[in-house]
Image (cartoon, rainbow, N blue to C red; front, side):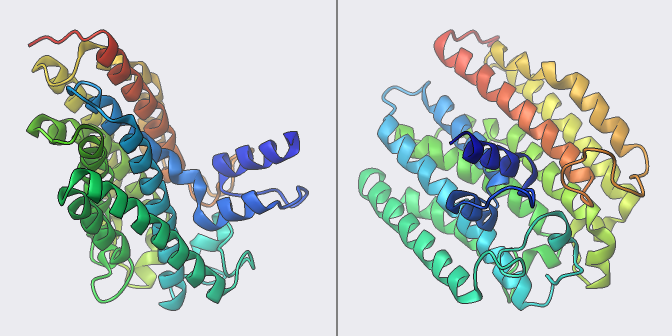
Length: 333
């Protein structure tokens, strides 16, 4: 069991499993679904749930069901992206996607038909969650779900291919912020006040930095394939500056929302991540290394790893601050 847990920890940390370790069933599916990025979805759901703790009658069964539904949706989204990028000729053995982590089909983790079946099964499970929460909470639930599904599917699927048109980054901002956080709040509390939409924005900004970082790492490869992500459109220098600005914006937004009373003073705990922020900003101010640094987990990706480290730490501190506020509320207004 200890060996299995070590496998799972390695996959969560690197989205890879060392060749000298035995592949188990759970590890295989963690790689197929790209479970290493699930923490962002879990954090969005946690933010929505902890915010809902401030409501008059939160239902924690509905919160848990919504959380499961979001993780399933994220898993389906990752598999859909890998399928359509392969079918569209984007993913191949020499493309960046296959260099930093195993591709489900190209690495023989699953067959093409198996991946299609897995996508169908996960979406059917998510449909069951949707029907359950719709029966409990009404029509807003499918509205959140269908908007999220639309952005997730057409992120890479034709005819929209949002990623190819510089709309992938804004789409991620909307999904992991207002839709996930707002949707989880609604499922838990049964209503959705305006202030929750506003409170969802700081973490939405953080998640967007992760995708901008990933697309910075793939800029040359994407430009060669005419995949016009935001970094391809802006160019490397402007995209690096944009991501630095977005990282700073997270802290500014939290401070403003604390000062105007939307968030409790405990949310200022996020400023404990400032040393990490400064480190990441310095990385973004220097050229990426030519070769893999010793011990670096997901080469040739570089900028995304640093953005993800800041998002993981700052998101955890944000959730902790919200949790403290739910138990011991202290607001400035």
